[in-house]
Every structure is written in structure tokens, then in C-alpha cells.
View 1 (cartoon, rainbow, N blue to C red):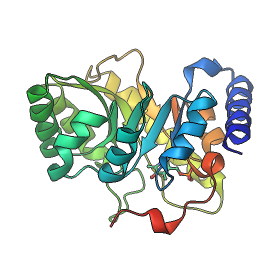
View 2: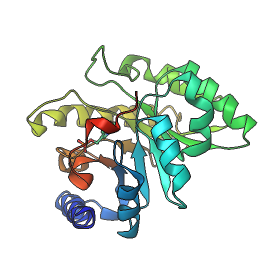
View 3: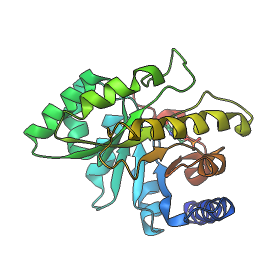
Amino acid sequence: MIKQNLSLIRQRIHRAALRCGRNPSDIKLVAISKKFPASAIIEALSAGQNIFGENYIQEAASKIETLDTTASFHLVGHLQSNKVKVAARIFHMIETIDSVKIAQSLNKELDRQDRIMDILIQVNMGGESQKSGVSPANLLELLQQIKLLPNLRPQGLMTIPPYTETPEKTRPYFKSLCQLAKEMAQHNVFFNNDKVELSMGMSDDFEIAIEEGASIVRIGTAIFGQRHLDLVEP
Ligand SMILES: *Cc1c(COP(=O)(O)O)cnc(C)c1O
């Protein structure tokens, strides 16, 4: 099933890109495997999927340990300072940096481990108090601080828009994130200001996100199926 789902999602990404005049190969698919066992990742790996996203550090660490793979893992859940050490070791990209404090602590740990890491800044576009992410108003200041940290490579922005049953309603948030990235790039605050990554779009709205410039889409349910609560990390 995972294999067929992946193939269908890849086709939809391809078609969405062509529809809006983009190169399909400019869009990376991150398969969100949170709350699914390592066996689900193995099935996706055998179908050629090589980037996975996880939300919880312990869950990710135990799965990655059992897998012997060169696939990359992205952290798409909130990073707490007490988990920085493990996160620095197991992830290839952290998509959820949203404060100077967590950026500094990650930079310090990466320095100890002699590693450099790609990161994205999570922006709270909907201004939702219960959601992580820096506000658009504080983004430039955060990026300027991050620029001073040698072990972090800020590649772009990530957002999770407010939940809605009508995917089309997420479009304005995607549009604004894209606009914001362009504004920030003019200040030369990214690792590569000519190619800023935009991580936006999930199972229900990834085609809209692609139309609005997404370069990374994060898809869970449409690949792995409904998540089961008994695999939630305490
Ligand atoms: C769970 C999750 C996803 C995937 O959501 P689906 O609707 O299952 O595709 C994407 N991004 C983040 C940050 C998530 O936590």
C-alpha cells in the first residue's frame, strides 16, 4: 500500500509542478513517518523514498537505530533544549528552529560533535498562540542572529498553517510565507539567498503549496495512512 501511495503522491507532485510551470525535480518529498513503526519506513525505502520526517526525538532515535540506511531524516516537530544533543546526532535537517536560544544551543552541540546542519526557520503565519514558530515580525532579527552561528546553515522557511477543512483556505498563508522568504533573502540572511527552501504543504494541501512555491512538501497520512494513537510518545 505504501508503495502505491508513494507512487500516486509522486505523480500528483509532478503534475502540480507542471501545471504551474515549475520543474518537478525542484520539489522534495519528505515522508512523515511519525507514529509509524520502522517497518513502514523500510517499505517506503524499498519504494525509493529517501527523506523522512519525524516529530518526536525519542521515537525517531529508536527507529533510526534499527534501520541501516543512508536516508535523511528531518525533524518537523518542536525541538526542546534538553533534546538538542540527540537531535544534533540523528537528523540531517531541523525544520523547526524558532528562537535564538534553541539555535545557539544547537550550534554549540553541533560544534562539539564537529557537525554542520541545514536548518529551516518555522514561522507562525497564523499567529496562533498554541503553535510554535517565530512571528513574521521577529523573523529578520532571528535570521540575523543565526547568521552568526557557524554550524547552522539556514536554508529557508517552514510553516504549518492554521487547521482548516477547506484546503484552499491555506493558500494565503503559503503565499505570505513565499513573500516573506523573498524579503528576507534581500537581507542576505540565508545560506543560499538565490535558492531559499520553502517547506509547506501536507497531505490535504500540498498541491496548493506547490502552486505557491513550496520546495519541500511534508506528507504523512496520504503515504502511510491514518496514524494510530498507541504509538504516541508520552
Ligand atoms: C504530521 C505532520 C505532517 C504530515 O501531515 P499529514 O496531514 O499526515 O500529511 C506534516 N508536517 C508536520 C509538521 C507534521 O507534524
